Image (cartoon, rainbow over all chains, first blue to last red; front, side):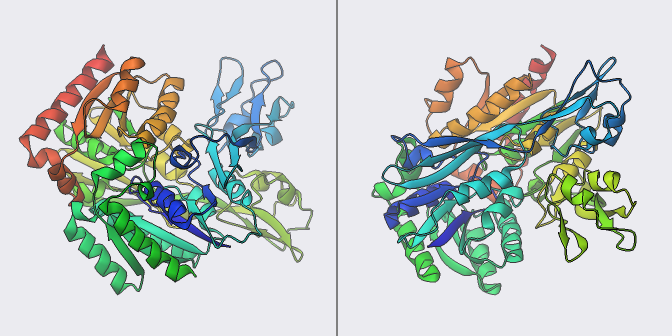
Length: 285
Length: 278
């Protein structure tokens, strides 16, 4: 089974719209949502089902026992994450800033720092009529890369399915890097704006570090045909596969708001996306 | 006064709102904390740019002193160290620079060396000081760069903090010092779902906040319903318009191009000011 990851760099360009329609076009029953910070794929593809859920444990977090703390400030001085707050006579850990390195635990001369388990998110697996792996990171938590890796691990390795569609997250950092690792193909959904183009270049650079095969499509290309043109030229000049463009279409947000994918509605955006889909598939297989 | 602009979902218009809000203030500092994909500078095209490197400390092993006790490898919670063919190997990208290995090494065989992970660029556009954090491709965490960006705020100017999307650690860091948060949300099923996450975040941090509903196609929408039901303050509803989308796509600052939009942002800023005072 090949893994196709949908990315964009910039947020809100249409990753989930594209990913959900691809799942329907494939009649695909194995897919995942790696945007653990703001997952949305389940809103259109698994409305009626209930997933199996599991707690996701991040690194342990430090807690200071107020009664044992002698107020020496060693933890405060050594913490690199500004996670220790000065109280009147003792010190306290800010659970959101704490990255769980346990340096405070190491340096405390009286053993007042304890490391405790921390549920950093929830892993979900829908396995009725489909295998859909997704997760939700708890607010303010780091370690999203590790959770993304867990989401991918929930997908079966041996299957007759040819391609699994994976929805990615915006940006180029930790969760994106974790989602790129081990996938066969990345489709970038670009937006025709200066911001969209700049972000596309940054995500291409990141994908290149991992030597992953990529292709680019443009969503809502007619909101700015000038920059859409520039993106096409950029791809041509840099030997990046360009697999098509999708027009702005009010039917898209209507479909999403009705809990449907755009593959379910007859509209011009669907027809263009179908074209992007077949071009992408021919590059993967 | 410091205003943080955030959104759960990407692409709702954080940068659009931040840039225009900074432009209508008498004097402003625009801080781009979306260090993975910073875009504000594309609108401002700031002049007289100065650059400052952001570095983190990474361990370097002195193999002459290392006796292979592996205490550092066992200590590292991030698995950034491994013992390979008799030597300690450091995986730079995974290291969180906590300095635990340096502290625990009994042989003093570990030294910490700075490594650049990005930079902070400062420049000027009219009344706005434009500060941009830029993370290098391939790096995992932009938090140290965000910290450097936030240091550049100015007490006698309006500080506008353009946050990364989502509600993860990077966002937490960005809004910590803010006096007021503005959540930019889209009136779609995805928009509402992601709005609820940041709503939870600002509520938890006890930050006063208001909502800008952007790209509104009908004023009776799911975001409006949700806000009315929960008595959430809607500062403004901005209708979707092709002209506005086009201006923004081309990197134009809307308040510089349209009197109508300028009025709207002046009004938004006034509302926020009175909320903060109130």
